[in-house]
Each structure stands twice: as structure tokens, then as C-alpha cells.
Length: 296
Image 1 (cartoon, rainbow, N blue to C red):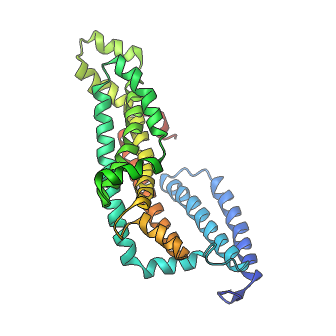
Image 2 (spheres, helix red, strand yellow):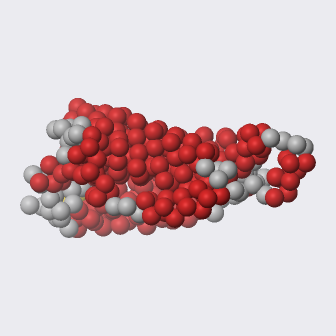
């Protein structure tokens, strides 16, 4: 059946989407070349470019799926996904609470905290540092599908088993990055602290931890996405009848692909907002780092 959108049908929808893409591309090219002297204008331009790029992708997606009559079970148009989102707010909110507010948040906090504390404890032991790095890299490469069934057997089908998967996935990136960050302080700075007769805690707090902050925030940002992925995948291996992973697996089985994309949208939005919040905190904490210095 021929699809209609804003009075357009068939290939007209596709050509309209392509025309929008060309115009948006030209506008983005002009915006990227603007050298704004005003800070407010620069912020607006930096926000407008990715927003316009994202809108362009959605328009192209809509145009291709409707213009070429792509079956909805293969790829639903964004408008259909949006209708599903607005019509299933209660389901999406329940899944979000189960997966993100319980499993992801709890597992993320526990995993990152333990990884950070263990790194501080083994910092003074060359033996442990030399031995933990290869083990940490090995554990970081463990597949989720191998960990998740074990955690379900250990902690049951509810959210604690998913939180346990998140703990395992976030522990070692934080551990490895913190150890690397603690070793980032230069020898001249360490010698200066030693000249001042600084104790180990003083050197750690005033020199080495500040120098390690870029590494620590890098681990926090990496873990913000790993945690969400781990919790969703873990729900494929046993969960109550709620949760993002449960909903995706059951919706695929019943060919409700628009619901699958609605869950993906919620997960992507939650992950992006979490990553952005951590990046904002990082900018305020590591304002001294060259990557965060603003050029005049």
C-alpha cells in the first residue's frame, strides 16, 4: 500500500527527504565555518550543528522507509516509532525503572567505587600492579553472554543479577584507568613533593589523584555506556516480565519492531544524558587539563 506523508506519496517523499538533506548539509557546512567571537553565539552554533545533523538523519530515515515502502517489520519510520513512544509511556517507564534506575545505577556505583578503591589500595604494591593489569585487560574482554547466565544463577532473575553483571563490566575499566592515572604524575612533581617531605597521603591527594582525574573520568564515561549495554543484554537470560532487555526480546519475537526501536530510543537517550552529565562534571573538575582549556 502506498504511504502518504504531508500530502506526498511514493518517491515524492524520498525526493523531498533528499532535498532536505542537501539543504541541511549546506547549512551545516556554513555553520561549521563560522568563527564566532561571542561565547553565546559559539555555544548556539555548537548545539545547532549536531541537532540539525540528527534531524537530517531522521528525515532521511523517514523518507527512505516511506518512499521505498520498506516493510515495517524490517525498518519502521521514525514517525511510527514516535507514535509507539507516546502511546506506551507506562510500559517504557516501567522498563526504564527496572533496568536503568535499579540495575544500571546500583551496579555502576558499586563497580566504579570498588574499582577505584582497589586501585588506591594496590597502588603501593609493584607486585599487585604488575599482576593486575594483564588480568584487568583479560577480564574486560570477557563476553557478556558468558557472564550473564552465571550471575542469574547466583543472584536470581530479578534486577540484582543484572546489577552484578554491571559491577563486573565496570570494575576493571575503572581499576585499569585509575592505576594508569595514578602513574601519570611526572617525576619532577613527585621529586618536588618528596623535597617538601610530603607523606604518601599528601602526595596522593594533592598531586597524584588530581593528575589521575582525566583517566578516572574517562573510565566513568566508558562505564556509563557499558553499564547500560550489560544490563540490557543480561535481561535476555532471565528476568521478571519487565525491563528493557525483556521487552526487546519479546517484541522481536512478536514482530513489534516499533516497540523495539522505542526501547532503543529510551536507552540511547538515557545513556547520552548520563554521558553528557559526566562530561560536564569532568569539565569543571579538570578545567586545568589541556583538552578543556578554552582558546581565545
